[in-house]
Length: 125
Image (tube, rainbow, N blue to C red):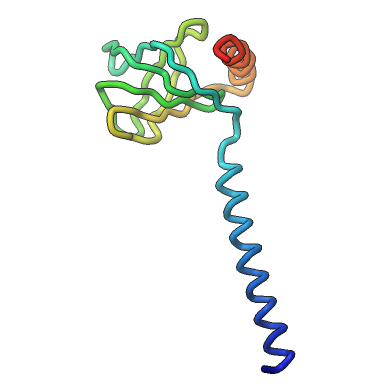
């Protein structure tokens, strides 16, 4: 085995390791906001109707909710959380008996939401 081949083989293995590390970092950094696990009753407002749901986790960017009604991806809904009021959201993922939503907030609204969320998560810790 030549030294040149060994060197290039080593380089390829190093690149594979670096590529894998890059993928792990990308997946780990997908969430932009701190997320907290909670179990709170909330109301969903969909097309003028109100449905009961359970908040499973929440961040300043969105939430996961357990609900009997699972709206389609892309549906615009309102999530009513005690202490936060009505928050406009978009369904980004459907799960069996649950949905993930992304909140539609301005930067200022998101900052205020994050402050309230910190207090909520601290109270439930």
